[in-house]
Amino acid sequence: MTRRGPREETEAAVVQVRAPGPQDEWEVSWYRERLADPGLINAGVVLVVHGRGYLAVPVGGTRRAGHLAVANTEMALLLADALRGREGFPEVRVRWSDSPETCHMITWGELPPETNDAARGRAFGYSEQAITAPLEEQAD
Image 1 (cartoon, helix red, strand yellow):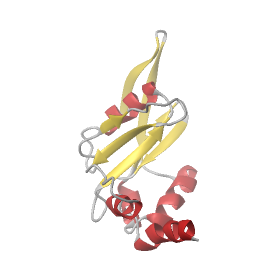
Image 2: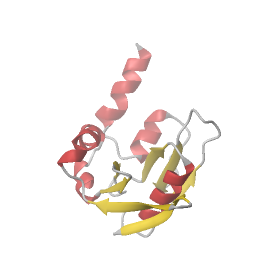
Image 3: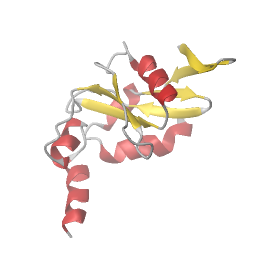
Image 4: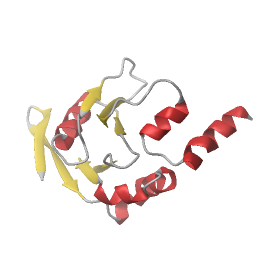
């Protein structure tokens, strides 16, 4: 599937949607190490724009929320549009950054709780080990 959006007046950006492959191993391994259900990665999609791939992992099981960080407005709009209507990506929205040093976020599923990091990790479907390891490091 391909979606087009404005890039410049003379050139349209194209979003290509494909399954995760060997070229995505860095991102895939990051999720594999953290998700309680790494099988969700197989239902994920890679959104490719200008040769750069963005892995999006759907909600399912204990994973109730997902997100992607992107640096610019155009990319946020393109990728959000490409995810809308796809199974496993309900309620796609863009959370705009207030600062040029912070990325915009494309989110889907439930809004993660703002209560604490452990609750947020559970909303993103991370394993208890993935949640507690960074918290234990912070306590040291």
